[in-house]
Image (cartoon, one colour):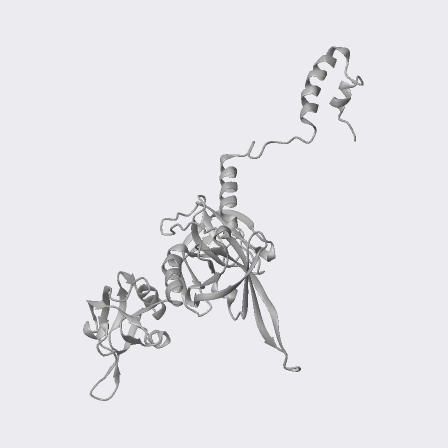
Length: 367
């Protein structure tokens, strides 16, 4: 084994002059006692920010899982059916009952789903419920409580641009990877697979790549603030713009999926005029085509399209605001209604002719 120059000093082969030999002996004795392999103790020399990031990762990473999606594919020549990998994504533990949260697009068209824990243990998962409109899905695995580490749930409505965020996931199949960034913007809109808009989306510059989908976006205290869902990139890889479904939406949707497997739709009891027809007419808002009998809208006096004396169609009421949220399209109306529950009473602003009115509508469940 090669000896260090200072260890050689102890053996009397010091190249230093006699005047420095004593000093070399003292220094080298202390250095060689610890040995050349001694480094800083864990955490020694790290900044407070670094230590906090490490603590968050070590506390939360056991609750982050890999989600593998396999689908059945038929060979039309041999008529045999094969199970082939569809890809992998990320998920995280919601509770100690084995519920796992991920993006809907991660498990879309899957015939078999496997969830792998950080220690490599793999479990078969079943779908408890899914909400494609918000790109959310709930899975469940039969795993011992001891291995289930739920991610603490925070809030997203109080987020501020510039605050630190951490993303944990499995980009390109590299499990349990951490990236750190900031909240780049708030209130973004993202399109789900169904074409519906997901509102109040969080934009971040934390590195998000294929495979990160479904993983948690955390604040600097390790609380869930969003679910990483998409990137904006010309190459398909990280370009500094990532999007996450806000946790306030997750908190509202997930309990419904666990309880019933679906999200309760809320409505007013109307059929709407298609957006493209309203746009062709140059009218902004949601036109009411038909009002359901005994529905909330009918009881509030809202009117649909009617015929005039000549048999022509006359535009009915146009909804322009629901509960203080401006409404320009059917998607806007749906986004405003989903903030409420059946039985809620909301103020709805309508335009009838050239006059604007406000009516109170009792919302109802949509079957």
